[in-house]
Image 1 (cartoon, rainbow, N blue to C red):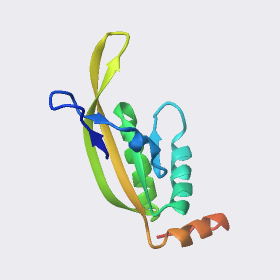
Image 2: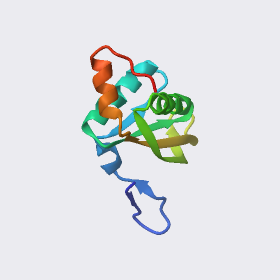
Image 3: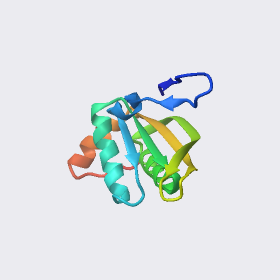
Image 4: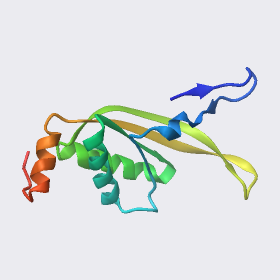
Amino acid sequence: MTMASSSPASPIKQTNNDNLKKNRIQVSNTKKPLFFYVNLAKRYLQQHKEIELSALGMAITTVVTIAEILKNNGFVTEKSIVTSTVGMKDVAKGRVIHKARIEIVLEKSEKFDSLIAATANGKVEKK
């Protein structure tokens, strides 16, 4: 994560480099169904060695579930999990609200390509 600070007294600000990551999936628990993200993660893994799943607040359980589905089916191995709290401005109430954040980095398993090929051929391979 790239961080920058304009002065010692100012809070640390996140730069836009985080938003430019091509292998990051930001998950919402209201916009898309669970398996949309599972299938999207598989497609990202076909192009990248690792992916990062990221979520805020109530969407954290969705991210954990996606990671577990991918791990339990042998597509990925867990590389790292980072939790933090971020402050977000609530315009309606005029104050900062702190939300939990999770980032899970998953890397492609050795058998990923064979599992994807089996899925594409209509065969479901058991562990």
